[in-house]
Length: 239
Image 1 (cartoon, rainbow, N blue to C red):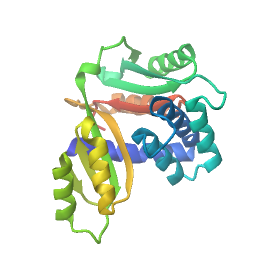
Image 2: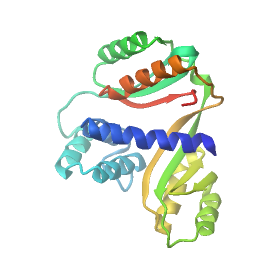
Image 3: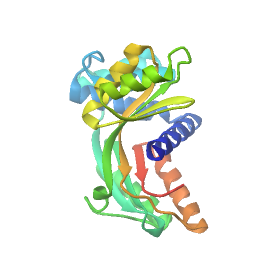
């Protein structure tokens, strides 16, 4: 269970960093637009959109901003043509790095990502160079409701299709990607407040770094997360 717990900690840290830098609205607006484009503008019928809208509301995004992002996605409002792109590369000591981004200009974003890699002792790779080192998995984070017995949460999650469950300060559930929506619904119907649900990339194996390379990698990851187009960054280093 250590793998997805580690991811959850990184995710929480990233969310706090995004808020501190005032970038979270930009990131979420793009995700809402993309979700609406692919699945329609009704959150009740579009799981990805519902998750993005819920996260936006949790971060106090104004309803008008949310509505405009949805309208851009369904073509009811003019705007930039945002598309999803994936970048793969190597950090210090050969750390494998996967980046999910949403951009309205592939050339600009690719150039920025390449520069971030080069200044931090890494290099941007070709498609497929590190993707084989990761597995797609669903991760659900929920508040731990003290009024619901942990055994009930555990059994409901496992019966719904969860692979693994960890209950501490939060409830963290690992699922197969195709079971993400079903398990999220099960937990919500139990009365849990789901704070995040997403398909992530889990490394099949992790590597340790020396002090200097660890510092370089941390700076590289921070620079990537500072980029307005970058949505998520995954890697196979132990930090």
